[in-house]
Image 1 (spheres, helix red, strand yellow):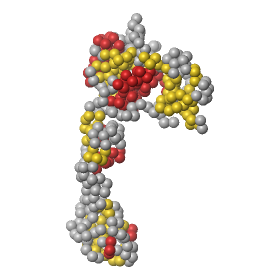
Image 2 (image 1 turned 90 degrees about the horizontal axis):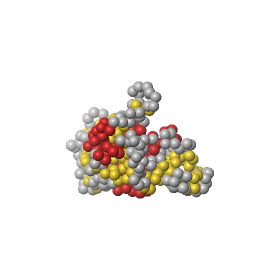
Image 3 (image 1 turned 120 degrees about the vertical axis):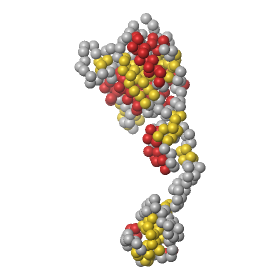
Image 4 (image 1 turned 135 degrees about the vertical axis):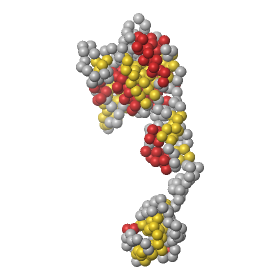
Length: 409
């Protein structure tokens, strides 16, 4: 029976993963597809914005010197947004204007319709001004927001709704970004049954791991799909892995990389040319974690137990995916927490303890969500964070330890 060649410490495994996570190529994606990604190059304004002087309100374009209480002005034209007036505002005249309309020649202010006797009718008419207004009143000058040639978004900024609006306002329909990593999650094992397909027979379980891993990858911003190959036949497993490695940036499996006789994944990837970076981490849950590479593809062999697989994804796979997208916040936030009671780690390796968090006067109180078995999926639904407890550590009540935050709390 093949044994783990060398168990490495958790920090070393994390370092090796990040060092071997190459950035994805820069591509130009449509605005909506770029959401959540980082800009790969500076974005420069193509023209002044606004491109022309325009009105900030619905009202009348006037000469400020003509305004005052109970002053009458003749309305000689109108200027809706997108259809500038061809007339010039002369002495004693006004032009009806709408928000975004081009300020006509001769006008140096806009008075709100609420400060007049109201909208004039068709053709020439007279309005009464209710008060005097200063020059520039309700006028948005061209270029007051952005000047042509100005850097409007710097490389590295995250693309959100506001960045999308700014880019669109400058005529950009595509943005240069590091594309989302392509992730293929391989589901293996004859005991697995597709959820909803049929009832379980003795010894079978519904496949939850691949669904969880795809969901985790998509939450991290990657493109992720499942490749279903529920078989314990070596040739079937090898063919599925070869298909996954042919196109994916990251291939993830759960199970099949331990030391059992039927653990076929590791043998198959070795035959397919995946070079091992490490196999085995002094970490609970997640001792049999495998990480390797083939060309531009990275391979993660996660443990088969559901909690082990999901925790290893959070602590190893997710940071790699985030770094591949050039994100500097690739790690989950880390906080300092304390327990109300003494906590001892007797496993001889680093222990990731699922905890809930509560804010107190002393700081963040961590409370174990209960039993920490690797198959207890409900424990993760209750966990706000993973407290990282060192090997053989004895944590006294009130002593601070580091925790990785999984969700808002």
